[in-house]
Image (tube, rainbow, N blue to C red; front, side, top):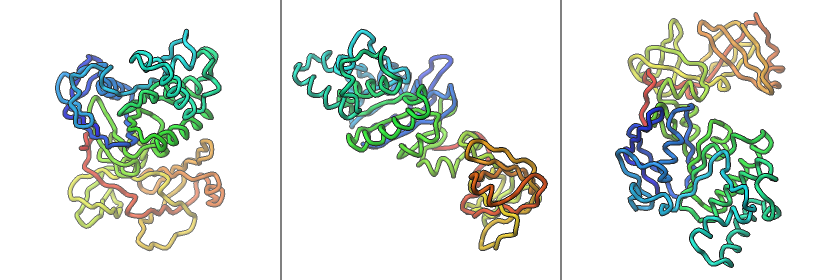
Length: 352
């Protein structure tokens, strides 16, 4: 549906370097990456705000690389809404259609339809300055959707909202996507948005796409040290792999599902490790013994540091922690399946 083919753009401080991506029809595609990775420039280049220095952008089999932004039929919503303060909500939503000189009755009908979809019909007479952040964001999304775009680009649409409103609007985005089938490309730093919304994810670093995959692939099977660290693997080790599926890290041998020979990085998510005071049956699991060094409670999650010859981090729910009954100085056993111990070639640069 959307093909980004070897696109580069240099704006000095921010840049894209030979970015290639494909986004399927009706797909909800999320882009992750630290500040300065090039995420917003990528969206603005797709939208036509910037022309690429090289490469092509193809939308529905049409090369739009040099097509003006107004003729691309792509909607874009920024985190700061960018509503016209002197216009009502109704006028804001209908602004694009009015610019196209659409029939007033047609505009009225489409605005009503879009407002109902976003649950803001009761706000049509209001001005943006009288709205909450969530209501303003709904208005901005309605303004983009009323144009029936081939693709909708969302630049951190929920980041400026409070937690409760963010959760509510996240659910609204999922419902809208299901109802309309609109292809959506969404930038975020919030991992909950990824798991709630994304069909696939791309991770960017310094203007390049490092990895593309499903949320589970990105968060559990990173292809580089950068991605592993960015998605919070925490248990990251350097070792020596073997084709038989064993990674030796210092004096420990850890069984993995994807064995490879030579130097490797090994990543294990802290929530994928089971902790107990008694030795569990092996049953094909990796089992290590160690001593609890730290216990730290963060909201509903308890983070436990264990010295098992290597420094491990384990995440438990509060209930799981209470059931485990452990504290600093206790001898414990760590167990985890080979399938959650992921080995990959060492280094920061992965492949898509």
